[in-house]
Amino acid sequence: MSKAHVIGLGKSGIAAAKLLKQQDWEVILSDAKSSAELEAQQSELSQAGITVKLNHSLTPDASLDLIVVSPGVRWDLPALVEARNRGIETIGEMELAWRYLKSIPWVAITGTNGKTTTTALISAIFKTAGLNAPACGNIGHAACEIALQESKPDWVIAEISSYQIESSDTLAPQIGVWTTFTPDHLNRHYTLENYYQIKAQLLQRSEQQVFNGDDPYLHQVGSRDWSNACWTSVDGKQNLLGNLDLGVYIEGDWVIDRGEKVIPINILKMPGKHNLQNLLMSVAAARFAGIDKEAIAQAISTFPGVPHRLEYICTWQGIDFINDSKATNYDAAEVGLVAVDSPVILIAGGEAKAGDDNGWLQRIKEKAAFVLLIGDAASAFSQRLSEVGYSNYEIVETMEKAVTKAAEIAPQYEAKIVLLSPACASFDRYQNFEQRGDDFRFWCQKLE
Image (cartoon, rainbow, N blue to C red; front, side, top):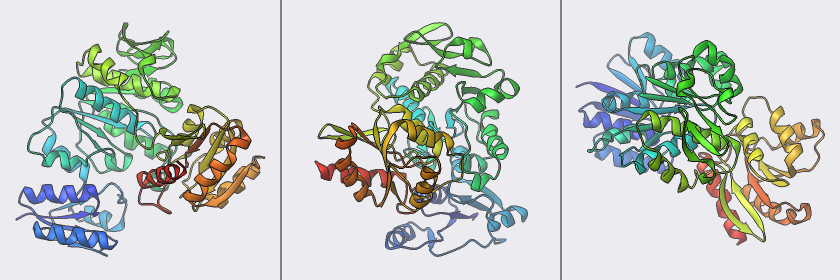
């Protein structure tokens, strides 16, 4: 019997372990941490014949035939490097799912920002067209959960991060979509060029490619690297690169695909120019898949947006509370500020990431009446705000205090919006950005 070791007792790791067990592998599933919740999962999985080791670090073992890593596990972990050097096959959970689902066409969406909204929108369009097209990866199901299902989908719509591409050597989608590219995850990928090359691998293996032509970096390298791809632009046909016959763009109030009016842009309910770009890339993917205009229009007119990405929570005394917890870096948080009306009370902070914060800080000066700082980054953020001459801020530390204070001061600054857009990872106080957004929602609803 073949033996596999799966690292990471999260959604992806559990699904990978179950898939391997279903295929008659001997499976060990390990996690470096331990908690009451993990112990409960350990007990449940052991009943299914899966050995679970907590507080455990992998030591490469000659008896292993396969190692599968969850997305959050560093690819350059010394134990994984040693395993690869010893010839033990080492792959990611997404690659494992691909091996069991590669007879089905995939749409793979990657990029620094915009992935989740674009993935959800593409999935909604495909489903409206009558296709079984679940979203998976960084959104919805783990990819291996799709592979475990008895009835296989018509399409797989996968949001794929650089971490997942890095550990997926053979994943080759029918359609690859690249949303944006800005510095992120450099603590893991070290250089911008390395980060770019990792993402480029996925698009190079895609049969058809869709690119955001309004992204400065992608636009810069477009003619050099992607001359035959489909490019999109909010700013019209004159801004297109690549094969102009494939381009999707906005002209007047219409989305134009290959010279044909597809849908009016006013049916999209989500705010912001960036969401128009997400719309164009989704339309391009849908048209490549042969989906008609009517299904696209119906899906987009009823699409509510994505939880934790400029998500409307409530209105309290005339003030709208908006959850943008998924803005986990400076660029995403800048996009959030651009999308809402000013003046705004901004809640920011968490676990800081490396990156260029200048654009974000400039946008704060333009649009934020006051900034409330939470989490581990609060002190560093306060220093940066002072350095750029912005003094309307306060360190409040917790989400509860931030929401309460925001509600209190919004009227005096005539702010109609309170925006949680952290510009940070969530791991200082929360398990993930979803839990952080849910905490924001909880305290907003307490106001009511």
